[in-house]
Image 1: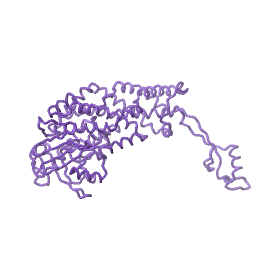
Image 2: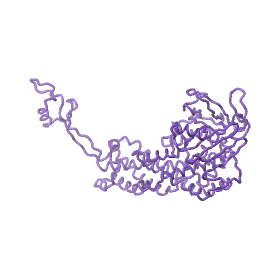
Image 3: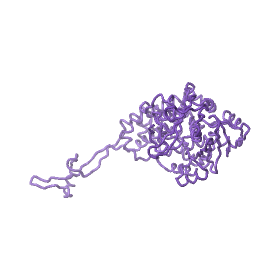
Image 4: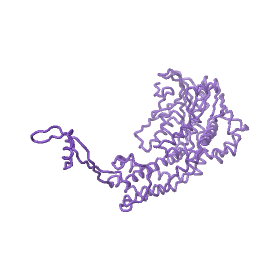
Length: 530
């Protein structure tokens, strides 16, 4: 936990993406308050009570409760009105002609005047040769004229552009999550590859979301479209001189009224809209002091504990209906067929999952990235087989080595279920019962793998070519009907491309997969050749 805290504090002090990052921390902290309140209100519950509270008293999937749809819609409207002015300023900004003197080779000298001759007379080192015909210079003092884009109004304009792009990045993720969750509920009803309890779990998670945000679905769709149009108007023009030559500008320059902002119509539009944008902006400095990072991480682990109980209960496992679950320490046992899953916490509130069937397999869920010495010590203390690092912030699916768990992502509980499926497979040696549906496994007559004829889940054993370590992976030939190509997605929809790649096997894979559904080796992180 201390490691993640250090990462958060270091991110606070960086200068480039801090504003987005810090606001992500604030958003996460705000959402997690509901979870902590639930734990205080219901310290111990039976699973039946827990299931009831998930629907009626607690939200495990939501978006930022402080997200103001109307304010964002109004701001988008004003920014869009200023778009024509932005385009014109990009193309024809107000500039001043800056002149300076510089000693250059003769072939580069453009302007020669009396000062050039006086300078050459006083600097003999620039004379190449003296003949009867006269002096042959090697270098000459010349006057250089260049366009100066760094006037105050242009610096403010560039800051305005940055703040618009910041607003787009900040809000696009929230709107995307909202629309993705709505679409998953709509389209997944036709899919046959999901777990039998998937729709039940999804419906419960959607209850709180629908209650709070369903009314904003159409508005969110339109706002996302408008943000995309604004982004398309700005991004292709970022290579223009006005922006390119002001990269090292003062980005904290105070907005002031000047003659140019008063007299020139395009600059006046930028001034008025930027003033409005600044007045509605998130008060970052004030919120920095309010965020308790220790409390936020503690609340995040509480959320993960609750989500783990929810994900386990909706993945075949059952628990004694009379057993009182301590929501702080958990200490709960689930059973399914011959599998037993014990879930509890250590003294750092990290989650331990002990799978038992033919043998034991032990996984720890943590927010820390431990060094090898500490990790080995942990594994000895808890007899761990694997440590899974959780991260509340979204990153590139194919490049990350942790697991994305966040209240704003509807698929978070499915990633927990992937971990559960993995633990079940690694704790099973007989291969008689399908861990996914409970059906009967059959060994293939021609190839060395097991298959369930009910859900068509295949369990294979692979060997890493580089490390020579063995591992298990799941497959399902019926689910891999097509590849997903990045070129089919627009730049602003790259997040959706990653979602499609990750869910290509409906989260029934226990190893990472690529855009073709091919297995990524967990040891060398390369495509596994079967």
